[in-house]
Length: 330
Ligand SMILES: C[S@@+](CC[C@H](N)C(=O)[O-])C[C@H]1O[C@@H](n2cnc3c(N)ncnc32)[C@H](O)[C@@H]1O
View: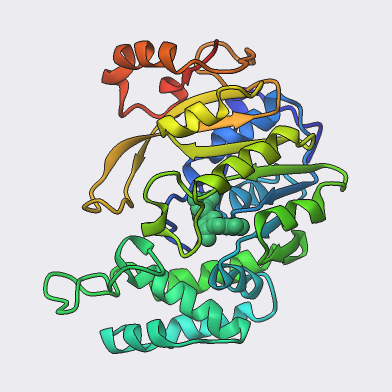
């Protein structure tokens, strides 16, 4: 990456999609994150995602040339194996499987019940179930279209050629993927944090409903332990969370920058319908992008003040972050 400075007008992040339809996926925030790095003149040699899931942000920034390399981690063995295969010579094998694997409820049941041990088989299971299951949920959902496949069939989100080609395209980035781990987040951060130019983008399991979305999620004690850990971290970091009152309370005492951003979710456990949600962003960098004033510094947050502002901005609920980010300060 150059000197880390990008003019707002020149912000171009390739909206490249991950091959996963990941619940809670954050690709849409890549421009915001890119701008945050730019505002803070962050020179990112290694953009690390300790909770990578679909890894859409890391992939977008890597493809846009905004970061030199990425490091990925997820404690879900299916996810970690998928990225290990995509960013390796086995990508060719996976692309070939995607072209020929049967798209049927029988195959879905077979893969769901399978207990693979090799990276290749874990990767195929991850990709297949993600693309053919309700809302991309790997562990606790049924096949797209239901058991009878009456109104639609489970192949609707499985465009074989596109997926195979995208796997091969991503595989070309392999030499800029520094590591892929299947660790608990803390071990992954410990492994990297001494290295030069590391930036940590944390996207932990949501506070609410995470148990319906992911195989691995946090209990309250883990959310608190995580907060305590990032509070002490000196490596630059950015954190996103679902906008839960409990999370606001947890992070309120921290002297960090904060933003609330409106977004439209399409994969949600309740009914699966699109609805507007808010995402919280926190960072130990001095500045987070603002729609009005570039580069203003926000320290701490006040839930009370936010609620007053929230009423005023309710009508802006479907506006993207560039216009609707709400500043939360003391
Ligand atoms: C909100 S999702 C991440 C979504 C991702 N940022 C994206 O854009 O697709 C949280 C991820 O954290 C993973 N996870 C849960 N507990 C973990 C832990 N203790 N260590 C590492 N990863 C964990 C889950 O498997 C899940 O993939």
